[in-house]
Length: 416
Ligand code: CTP
Image (cartoon, rainbow, N blue to C red):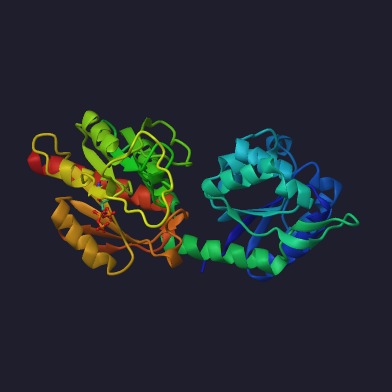
């Protein structure tokens, strides 16, 4: 098997010395390690000792990349299979979350197209500060993986709580898990960088819908919008004009996409209709199946004892578009969120709703799909079922849009 290459970014902090052991253990596992140190890290461990252990030159600042040994920062960040940031300081996490690129470490982290694992280490108060919580949540939403921090005594006397760097074996186990997932996916790096969807309009629905019960309460579900947003982003990356009709989500708007925000299923159907025609329509939204039959203008008061809530069915947006005559997109793709018999239900839904393809996935609580970053899907088409290996939602989206581009190309060629 090919040797796995780690780019280790060492942040400044007392825990930086543990990186020496980390390097040694990673190399014992047969991995090669190249290290980058922030200016602050060099106050805690010397670049010379890191160089001796990695058996490679250590990079310490952007400036380094201009000398005769130049390897550009893009190359440096992409020649690795995995980037590990350890210790990841509060400052480094903030820079990553904000997309800063004012030194070598942050520039590499912004330029990379490889998975990133961060092992935070800082004072517990800094880790628990709302700013750090916000940054960590943003990074997780961006697909950055975390290991630790662990709770325990800190180097400063009298300080205890979450903030200790994860133990070296824990960091290695997390790294190996990510590398194994990468191999299973065959890596997105193999995808084309061209614009196979140039000139096409792709319409995507995403997120949950909120159905009011009264002015302050609503019916909703656990959809995060991550999968639908990733589809919109992938279509834009492949050159399409993209309209994303989304229910209320915390997921950031994808770059280069027109976003239409809605609350209810009826608003979503209206927005979808208003934005047709499209070449491809992808229905990734978890539309609420029901809405309250009657949502009063005033807050409903407690009246003691039981209370019934009458529900009526919402319109099925996918079925409405798939069965619409002249405005039907050339390729209509639905999702099937199931908790058992995934392929069987997916196949049934394809027929019942008139979709061309159904992306069927298991959303049972144990899978972590709802709200999580990964997905295991089965693509149900008219000619059979493809079982895709587990992969990130971004990769599901990229593959799906690549398949879709191929399908449109074949349809166009067949029509000519
Ligand atoms: N869908 C839709 N409008 C609805 C319900 C679902 O457009 N009112 C779409 C979803 O976006 C998805 C597909 O239909 O692409 C299947 O959604 P899913 O929730 O799996 O199925 P339901 O039709 O709601 O069936 P059930 O809940 O009974 O499994």
